Length: 195
Image (cartoon, rainbow, N blue to C red; front, side, top):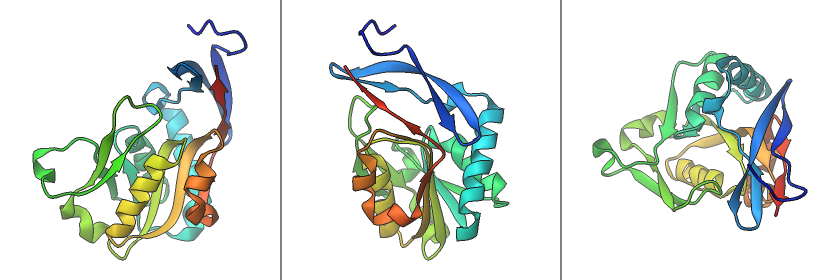
């Protein structure tokens, strides 16, 4: 429980047509965040959010949905299903045996305690190259993780037609993703909580 005066224990965010109540947790000595964990949400909530995100991007006619592991996976599944597609690609964060020669981009997320990399399996390159790609994630915060993913996808030859998130956090992400501003959409916003 956060005992800092002025910092709530929870924050209720509008996420499309739904409200989600999120715990507020410290991530450093001077910052707390409303923590969105899609794996802690009911399946029906993520299904509805995926359908609403897909409806926003349907006009962009994506060929395939891409998301980062791990928390982006449920979002990718629901958006893919709602778009009537039957395939998606996940950018891995853990080097598995089959990813020895993967395309790679370094990344650091606000909720991670260490740096990591996003890995694109070369076996999936033909599913990305020259195709209309919709990139989705659970939360866009600083934009650094999404920016790394988008750079990796462009390196693979993707045509990025949209960048979507369930929630956008704070105010830093628009600058980091400025070159995608015309294709960027989130179902809702959550603030940062300076301590």
